[in-house]
Image (cartoon, rainbow, N blue to C red; front, side):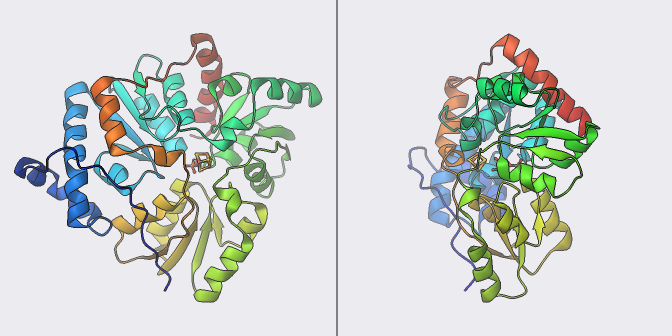
Length: 343
Ligand code: 13P
Ligand code: SF4
């Protein structure tokens, strides 16, 4: 049996499932009925209702990453996608408030791009092992070691690290950004595996750093061999944060949005996504005819974001993300250059 249970977050039932809530949220329930049973929905729906009401009242927008659970992704997210899309939208939205349903570096990126907006993150401790792996002092040492070599910094970093970088990239545009610089060599920090993947796609020489994603580094080629043994026709898609031997054993590597595009355009009968597990749940909810294997590796940081916490941040305006203005201005140059190069 290939399919596994979706990852479902338990909800405290604290708000009432009134007839008004039931009626207003019925079209949203249709989108996620394959994931949540009716009892579970009774607990989720009052939060969905109240969040959507408050968003309208406060002119707020929720930017939800592909790793959010289906209740957030399908029922309260206004814009959903990968890090690149969320950054592009942060630059364009005319909402007064951005609630970042994702991790802290994503909220900082939104604040860097839109300093005039209030950016909230429902849980301040939603971090990222890659962002933790490098400091501005490390970057300055690298500059000394590789004088004149541009520093291409993955968006999964702090604003302070972006501020001492030349340009940012995401997993969706890394090759384009590296090639767009028109130089023979670059430093790509901090994700060693993303840098190694980009090196296979370009002639630009890539130096890297020893940062890893604590979720994607857990996948092994043996996992893929097991999936292929269970079903020789299965299509295997991997995120470029995976180790090189995992990408090698896969049929395709791409950002979370590129994986979604792949399955929605090629519509493979059976597919496994080597990435965080809520991605598969979200695709499965939208494509009930597709058979997805769900190799569940949870990102503990992404999973800190829940409907009650989103509601709390909208009600109280707590957990506002603030970036020092000088740091933000310097980091913005690196982010803007990325947005320009990825057009
Ligand atoms: P994407 O840019 O592909 O959405 O990836 C972000 C991330 O944190 C993956 O672990
Ligand atoms: Fe960071 Fe990995 Fe979680 Fe993405 S999945 S936020 S890279 S720890």
